[in-house]
Length: 296
Image (cartoon, rainbow, N blue to C red):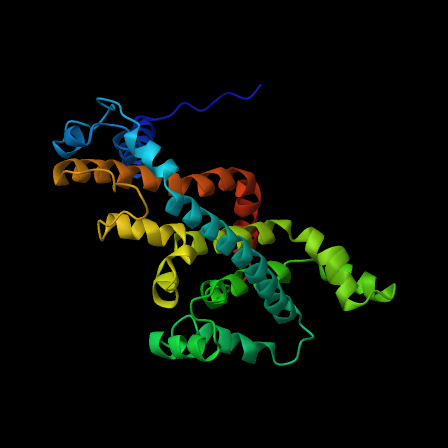
């Protein structure tokens, strides 16, 4: 029976320092999230005075009551879910359609196309040309201006291409010998084997679209089409709650207190969908990222 090697004093010291450092980084990441959570149902005056830092005080759910009773928040939720779903569907399809041919060694000129894709990682058309393009395509003030502009980028194409390059070439050769066409090979073999990278592409697309507000700010004029993040921006930065969040409050001081509650509450409400989605995709996400980073 093998004997366990006893750790030396320097090894123990290293472990203690390592775990302490990791614990410190973990607290730095988790505490701001925890503070926003407890501040969302604590007395705003206590939060402003710095009395809330570990436990909630004078618990109140007035902010959440107003958030869930406001129609603009639900409209933003609906729009964000719609935009994120369309972006995930269209972006993932476009990324696969671009990445798979670039991963094929028999695709003539693939290196030239990769150069063009790589250039977009460093340079882009700029805001004004993009705005004029969207305007000339008559996409202004439509959801497609938000969805199509950010549907796919070269980064996810490169990740998907790297994954496809790792698929066994013998499978394709055997399929060709059996008379399998390229489309049937993709449908029957490539896509079933690509669940990890598809999960990565979907998660990247959803997170990018869910957290984005700039495209909506530039291209949308109708508040009924605003995503949740743009409504959140109006509350956090411009201090302008939409809808009927604070219309019934008469005094400016009380309105300021309630707006403070609403700010923290909306952040929590806006983060819930991603927090609920990630556990279901975590296994595929980690696997896809690691597989996509082995070869370049």
